[in-house]
Structure formats: structure tokens, C-alpha cells
Image 1: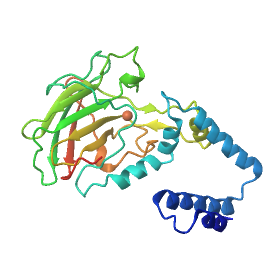
Image 2 (image 1 turned 90 degrees about the horizontal axis):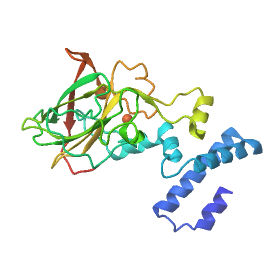
Image 3 (image 1 turned 120 degrees about the vertical axis):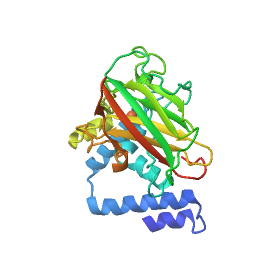
Image 4 (image 1 turned 135 degrees about the vertical axis):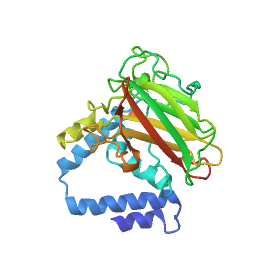
Length: 271
Ligand SMILES: [Fe+2]
């Protein structure tokens, strides 16, 4: 059967689409040989995929969620945005990034509603030799104390709440005030969430801040900094947690403090 398909496609068809199509079909045939699904089980798979499609629209992308929670998105990101030893790992930006956030002065407050426990963030952007990356642009965004992003809550949070765009100083340093973010759960009310629940898996994300750092001559760094103490730190549904991305939220005179060290690799503007 598989050979008949190869023959129909033609041996000369070696472009990427044909190669990928045949590789996927071959893997599926191999899988069927191992799992030997019944007709009912095949129909259940088709029904599930149909539900995923029906749950995808302009506001919600269940296909992306499926790719995320089975690790496909992060695997593709890891292959496409490798970083040398010593550089901060790149991760997915996630669905809540905005590129239109106005510039925030160093020391500014990202909380536009004042809701949540205070957090003072200091950080430094360095290169692999330990030198500060002067003038790097540091974009940051994170959820509020209820685990919600501003663009999930347009009626409850001010525009650009908990988002900032800062410019590092001559030593690559930056600092800002904000509130301590809470972890959150990805949508569990659709077919992907129901599947994960049947498997006993939650779609948790431990508390984190997102960063995107750009500087001429360096590879753009998109990453997370995670709260090491979050109870869900070992269960990130998007597989973004890596040892180099763990940080401690320390008790401070007023709220908490967080120190962030990010290391950029030289190169183009990839990722
Ligand atoms: Fe996030």
C-alpha cells in the first residue's frame, strides 16, 4: 500500500513537501502496525481531530494548543533557535506577546492598576564574554496576580498592564517595578484539555516573566524566567522550564525582588 503511494507520487518528486508527506505517512503506517486500532478507535481519533478544528478560530487556536502540549512547538523552537553553551536558552514567546508596547523608562512601574504584591526586578544583559550589552532593548510581559494577561482581560485590566519596553544602560543593566505574577492554566475546556484530563495531565504553567531582548549584532533572545518555588515548576505544560531559566523571588523590604541575568549570543536577528 505504502509502496503504491510512493510509485504514484513518482520517484523524481524529492521536494520538501513530498519528502515530508511520505515520511509522515510511513510513520503512520508503522504506528498502525504496532497499535492495530479498531475501526471505532480510528473514528474516535477522527472525531477528536474534527473537534480540535471546530475549536480553532480567530480568538482561540486549539491546533496550536495541541502542538504545544505534546511538545511539538518547543521541539521545533529548540531545533531552529539553538544557543551556544553559556547563552540563555531561547523559548517560545507564547500567545500573549504584543509588539506595540510603549517605552518604559528604567525604574518605571509596569503595573498600571496597582493590583498585586510588589516586585522589584533588576537585571543585566551580558554577552558570552561577560560584557554588558549596552542599549539592548528589553521587552517584558507577564500575567497578573490571578494568572491573567492584559490581553485576556481587556475589560478588567488597563491597556499594556504588566508590559514594558526598556532600554538597558551602558553596562547592559535594567530595572523596573511590577507585581509578582501568578502561574496559570492553559484552556482546559476544549478537546485538548479534555484529552489531557483523561490522561491525568493538567495544563499548568508555573509563574514566570517573559523577556524578549534585541541588540544589533546579537541573536534576538526570547525567553522566560520562572519562579523556582512554584509548586508546578516540574509540570510546565509547554516544556519551557530549563535550569538556566530558574530564579528566586526573594523577600524584600516591600514585597519581593528578582534578579535576572540574561546572556546573548552573537549573530543575526534570528528567532
Ligand atoms: Fe506566559
